[in-house]
Length: 480
Image (tube, rainbow, N blue to C red; front, side):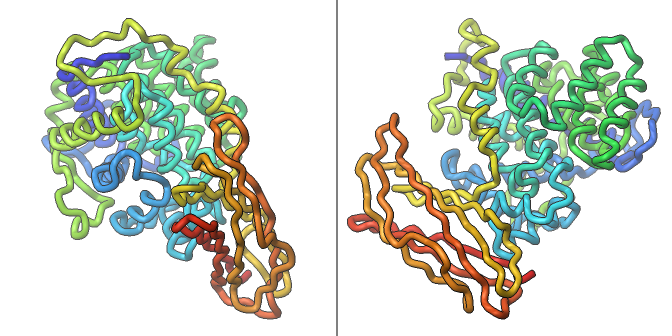
């Protein structure tokens, strides 16, 4: 069991939010500037932070956690909260919401026709998960998936949030920069573009290149992706962290001077350093410059009552949630009044295990539903767009969560004009033992009629005798 002193933990959580506010305020005036910059300080009025959606969206995630509890939050809950409380339609935000409003649940909402799925909207909002799961990167990354897949699906933007969530969670118990970067890299595929850009930054620094030269190497490698994309901007965070050499101001100024999504790079690096060093170590003049207030820009304040208005209020509410998250997941970390005790800490326990790496290999964007006794995964093998007379294939996998085996009957309520070409009417679900496989998979093949609607909805019903919960799986196709 790792023990973190409560007062020290408060200082780190508060440092996270103030550091994020500082970095966001520093970088916001330059957002979208693609050229090399020479930022030397703030370009805003003193005494108040600039509004930043990076912080805003996490206030909504906090509300979801407070409303549903640690074990009640998932991608479906966060998706519904997107629609209710987050008005902006920028890039992946708008595409994700548009897909959900049309009927596509996460992660399909983040994958379908989303040209921004490799962008920055997810990794900029990972601090809430890290603060709720300090010293537990595996838990933080689980929540990061629920979050990122809503508007990034299985894109590079999701890998980027895995990386930042893992780094920030581990930063509560590890302060070494290189170790933290290695921990973060362990949670993403070795060959993904985010990892590639990070490694380019690390290599440039190791070879003694100037930070501007390293930045150019990152830009050259990411030219095919374009601007506002996660791989390059995550690398800019790393460049600031490396070349800042432990100095908070130098680190943020370097990251922001790399250009592109400057409010995001500055804010995320500010939060990482704020966690590592605590609020007490942040530069006093910069803390005074932004103050304690939270200025909202991306939340429907008319619908969200009781929104945290200061970093102090946010810190207190997050810490209250932290104890619930750690208890719910039976985490080997506790916040206590005694001294911090990390004597049982090892880097291996913070690094992604084989189970997580297996999940990365299987991260195919399947929609997951929990029906208490069973978990269902639905994959649209042929996509969700369909033309008249076209066939569509859906794979449905059911995993038993209970100890007894079940026979289950399957009924198809198809969209108007659709014909069932293939699909089981009865299936057998093996019992769950914790050792043997307790799942079964079947294929549903449909054919559209001579005409299709803009939106075509149906339901696959799976019922088991002796179980009151009926599995109702929505299916949806867009008329191409």
